[in-house]
Image (cartoon, rainbow, N blue to C red; front, side, top):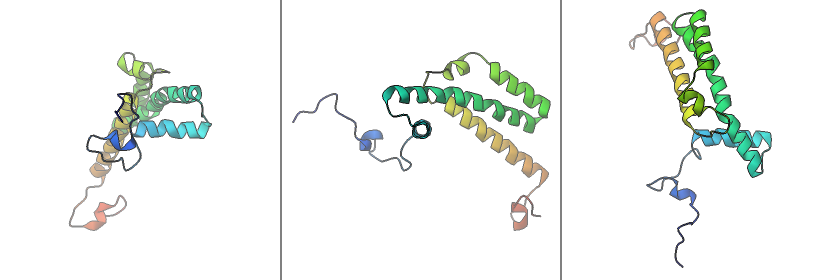
Length: 144
């Protein structure tokens, strides 16, 4: 039987070396799938509407993350200014977070910013509470 150029892609063909994803798929798709299950979307138009809402929601989630990042780096005023700027920023960020533009780039921006927030918080904790590998009690936040 000849193979058709429009053959269905099996799940095993997802990666070039034929490995399967251990978690089932990319995170952005998993987020959309979870929201579709939670909202009860089952038809194609419903799925498209739910998927179209994910980038604007992630862009809205950037506002408190940026506020916390600015607050950690300087003070609450800096966080407020940074959150205000991210809310009205133009250009490619706004384009990637529009309703209907279902692409993973806004998720990359959100999760990268969350990582930077966690990294800055970890650096601030180690600045205030130095640790030593010789004294295991200093490896916890309350220890030492």
